[in-house]
Image 1 (spheres, helix red, strand yellow):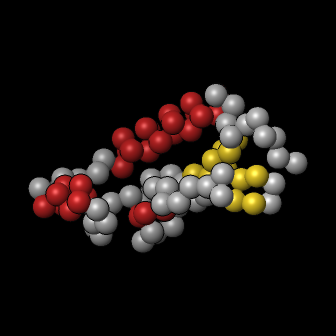
Image 2 (cartoon, rainbow, N blue to C red):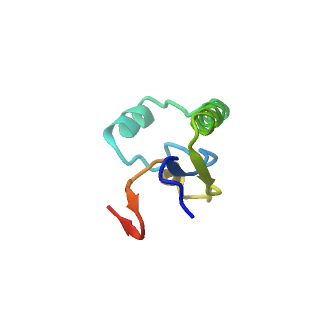
Length: 87
């Protein structure tokens, strides 16, 4: 049974995050400047965010990262769940 008082998050770690396929202007600009993503720092920041959300009472559902799906880390769509309905 879902507890309406605790927010729930479906998350994926930045394991395969990269600039190999830029999907927005910031990524395109970074790729042109030969910027790189520090995956160890991104991972540490992500873990810290997960700890903070959990400490605040959120329910965290972790999804494993998948190679070649760099966007999986980022929330493309968000929804609010009410019973069996997602808005």
